[in-house]
Each structure stands twice: as structure tokens, then as C-alpha cells.
Image 1 (cartoon, rainbow, N blue to C red):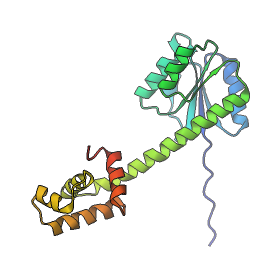
Image 2: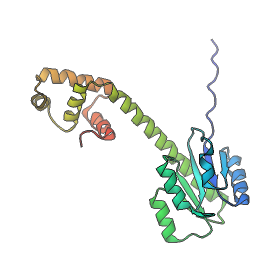
Image 3: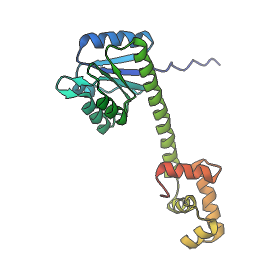
Image 4: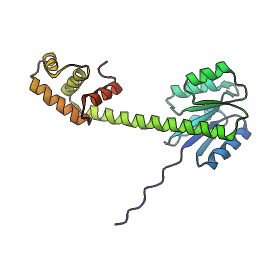
Length: 211
């Protein structure tokens, strides 16, 4: 039986926000030459006009746009839940601004004029960071889905177990027999897809349980 090949993955996305059309055009050409897809915007307000493709990516953002600071745009994007890493460009870079941008999560801060390779390196690092974040988010979604299958009693047992209590102590806390606790604990391990207490503790930490 012939199986068709899976569709190729869409290339990563680079969102370019700069009020200088020549900069947008040159960056568009550079990034497309290495197989990336791009979206070009003259102003940050245009960003929300259409949904972005659901692929790893980053934003290349001029730090000084007409009437608005790129640092403010970065903060607004974060507040709106846009998690794409940011690479800043500036013709007016200063150390305090660079430090502020990096502390706010920027991947890099490039002074114009920059070398093409420097931009490609920064964009590659930003896309890789976003790819890792997406994988981590996907893993957490899986943990949440498993946790949602637990009964209320199993959740109680899990919370006490990951806090360091022995089965006998959990039984006393919940006024259950130790055998019943062992059964619940086994169900928790099976439903959460883990084989060790250490794995269960890591998942609980990701869910914010047991603190």
C-alpha cells in the first residue's frame, strides 16, 4: 500500500517591524534567501491585523519607531500573549537600553548597520529559542491533560505524595487504609504516564502542585 509523504513543515516565520521601507525590503530579501518566511510591518499597530502562522519564529523590531519605543512594543506584545522572541535593531543603541531590552527577554540587540551574518545568527538563535519554548509548552499541555483525568481523591493523594509523605502518612492524612492509598498512588502514576516518584515530582512542579 502506497503511503503519501507527509506535507513538508512550513518554514519558520520572521516578523519585521521597521518604519524604514529600505530596511524592511533588504531584511525580507536576506531572510527569504535562507528559506524563512517573512511578514513586513511599518508600524507595530499593524501586527494584530491578521493572525500569524502557527510556526516557530521571532520578531525583528526597530527600537525607535515613529512615535513609539520598541521597548514599549515588546512589553505590549508580552502583555498580549505574543511569545515570539525579539531581536532589536537600532541606529541609536546605548548600553542602558540594551540592558533593559535583554532583561525583558530580547534575544539580541544589533546596531545598524549590521552584517548580514550577524542578523542571520541572531534570528537563528531566536527561532531556536521559540522552537524550544513551543516544545516545552506542548509537553506541559500533555501533563495538564493527564492531570485532568485524575479523580479528586487521586489529586489529593498526588499532592501529598509529591510533598514527601509516605503512604502510611498519606493514609493517616486522608483517613484511608494504606492499601487504598497504594491503589490510588498506582492509578496516579499510570494516568500521569510516569514510572518514578522523581518524574511525578517534576510534573507536579510544572503544574504548581505541592508548593
